[in-house]
Image (tube, rainbow, N blue to C red):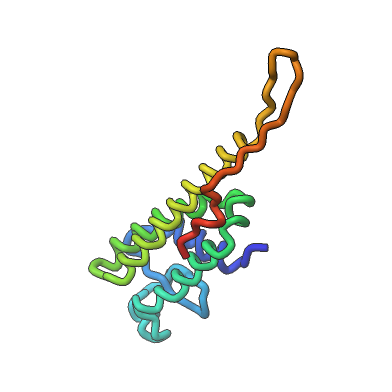
Length: 154
């Protein structure tokens, strides 16, 4: 079961536009849509540094439960959230921590996707039925050294 706050955070990130600012409540991200966003964030003590924890929490959760996200086909939403993070990087210009988080999480996400694609291909080829000249069929099992579960990077 996927945490609804994680899905909400991903949707917010996927749909954020350049120059929109975020406000944080607990680990939940939302877009500051007040009339004077800077005043609202000042009153609520929200700074750009406050977005780091919920973003980190969101992607750490995804990586810890990546099988669920792949199985439930949230790949497009996660990809879109990275596009939103790029827009957020443009909004919070020269915010080095966000740059580092984006690069790290994006690279790890792509490695997981590549490994999942390899795993899908491997599942297709792991068991093959071979026909021989005498029309008998034998099943050949192939053991693969590169198992996705052994190569995770987190």
